[in-house]
Image (cartoon, rainbow, N blue to C red; front, top):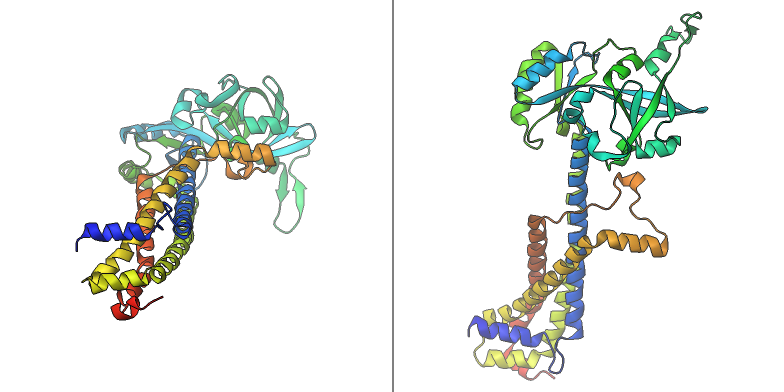
Length: 424
């Protein structure tokens, strides 16, 4: 007896005489389909979230950053930028410090980034994400995230006051014994006033809600730093996902000069590592859904074996050996696995494709927002289907379903023909 006969019998046993497919077979197939669909959706969302987060990180920070080892301002950034260009990279001086923004009587902690207007594209490409106003970094002007502008209640042309923690700290002397003194009562500290020239939205909530961008000369003055200095150098390379060569060259050139060099992966290593661990964890947890479906297939086939006991006995009496009977029922599990996996793949990919429409409908009809931007940093749910991930899910699903058929297949193959023919 050949494989064609085994496939014919396996398909024949999956359905009763009058129906295209039996109810218990359909339930097993639906179980596999849902398990595979859930796996594909969750893994696609995790992958999309990771890729989107990496893209947003690369848009809002440098590929490589250079700091003074003492964490003091870099007074001569031009010489460093020259060395960086010799390594085949683009560099730009940046001032990055926390500050307090005053609006009325309220103070809001924000992050101030000072950029050189001519080198803005080499540091943070804000010009591509302007939502209102103009891309301008003239003296006394600032750009702010759209969420920040909304929080402060300001628009284009409005004035804001920014306090420098460095200047405030210089007004007070703390002796380490719990005593606080004002350093000079004759000096009056005045904050800096700026005009809002434009707003931007980079699509990364934590950046849009906390960042104010200004001219680097204004930031030096604001934080009482030497003119022309920077807190770090933002470096951009051609391929941010393959920068080991540039990183090695810069460390060799700048390490002996008292500078630290870090890649964006190193500065976000803990966060990116957590994303990878969560993706793997979700896969191993959700694969149990498919495993449960495999047990459902096993129960289905045990029922089929009981229903077809006399036919199995007849096949064995006509010369069907142990392996032939085993392959019939293993093929049944395989066919259910393939059918459920195929249907689950279609369902999962469809849900991923229409995910934002489904979320909008859910939010519209129920008022439930399961993906709020302020918690997840993105305005819409990211997802990315990777062929290798879907392939692994499909292969594992089919294997589990096939393995689930081994016990009923072994029971069918172990039936004694004489006893099976007497079965009622």
